[in-house]
Length: 212
Image (cartoon, rainbow, N blue to C red; front, side, top):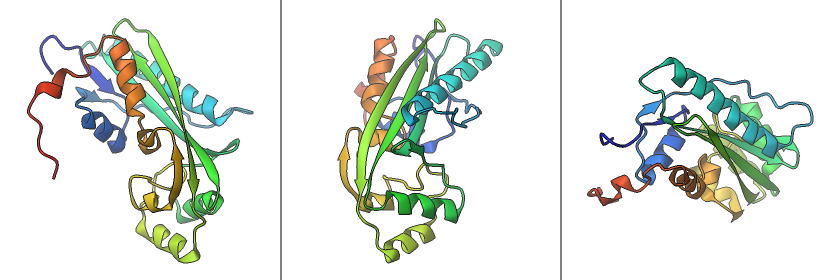
């Protein structure tokens, strides 16, 4: 961080979101995961859930920043990703049975991934975006399902899979943002930050480490 650049807090514990931000040259000054109730409200659509949870996280992080003078007036970025088949929200799989149920439901079918973005500005305003990606999985053979479950890659992943990993072999069609499915839509994130005055490209002129 340069002396005149405002601070940026990523209010997430996700290493994938951190890695995606770093991919476009943005290094948060602090990580402050937020803990909010992620239970859907009665009748709440997946897209509404993703946006509401991002806003809830932003409000919680803003309240924290007001209690800590070091981070008061910082940019704070939050996000929540929801995987859904129709109106049904799939869980973040924590057990093998949960992951298997998700994968059997996704097998041979289309589904959607929604990410709600929320950005707290230094003035305390909250700006939001909602991003949708549509995917279709191949029909999974029993051997593929068993092998993927054995990999443990699904653990803690919404919908029971990680598109940036082994499960990339299951995707036959993807319409929209790939990084959205990983957990942070980069175009929309950069546009949201830049539109509120954050210097997104500040680090781009620095020497880059060659990609192997």
